[in-house]
Image 1 (cartoon, rainbow, N blue to C red):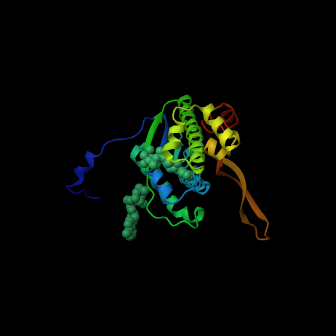
Image 2 (cartoon, rainbow, N blue to C red):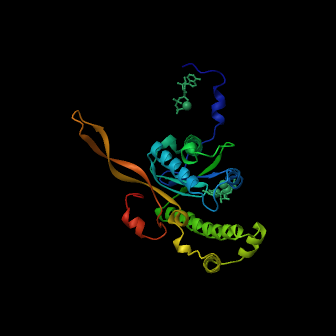
Image 3 (cartoon, rainbow, N blue to C red):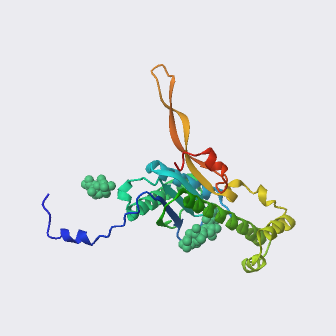
Length: 257
Ligand code: ATP
Ligand code: ATP
Ligand code: MG
Ligand code: MG
Ligand code: MG
Ligand code: MG
């Protein structure tokens, strides 16, 4: 096709292709979800419906982009790990981030009525996103451990904070009571004042969501005589397990191979 004299503007675009042979992490995070969650009266500290909506969106992203090996989610954020050899969109950072964010956000709006059927969506949920390259599996695992440790720290704090607030403390009082407390102090506070054993808080809240592809036998069609025809397919599946220790990776060596 003939080119117009305006074509030169294309040369102003900058190359943002990510380093080859590095694992690519795209992390997205809800914008202003502190406000968004209170506007929609989310259950505190953890609204299960909203967490399940986040997980459902992450599964859709994994269905859309086959090079994602694992995803990790907590609160209003999700990290998607693209295989180090992906050639998707020439590994261009802006393309990967924009497609991940818009796929996630579009599904968040589309699936909202399914997960929060009695809650009217009052404003447009938006997510930011970034891509980071990690050169080795070791550092990539440290990245995932960092996020899961963050889940634990935040969840323990939020569990204490909201127990105090629900017991009648103001948010300022609750904050002051928790200032400078260690893990042990928080567990002690939960147990002595609220009879909550932190280790019995659901794994979904303490460990966050891990999405991996698992082989499942599913019925793909029915034969003429009605007999079901099964096939083994790979289905994005949500787990709430420890990924800081070695066991998960020993059991699932294919994820980061
Ligand atoms: P920013 O735009 O900088 O990300 P933010 O308000 O979204 O600001 P975050 O640090 O991302 O700040 O925190 C997310 C907020 O959303 C927290 O207040 C968290 O408690 C809340 N939140 C996220 N998911 C849920 C949920 N499922 N149930 C209850 N609250 C939630
Ligand atoms: P890519 O993912 O590379 O962008 P694409 O299929 O989206 O692939 P584009 O070059 O972006 O390719 O082309 C957009 C396509 O959508 C064209 O085929 C265009 O005709 C069609 N399209 C966009 N808007 C409309 C519209 N309003 N009515 C009809 N067709 C449209
Ligand atoms: Mg943030
Ligand atoms: Mg946020
Ligand atoms: Mg967040
Ligand atoms: Mg297009």
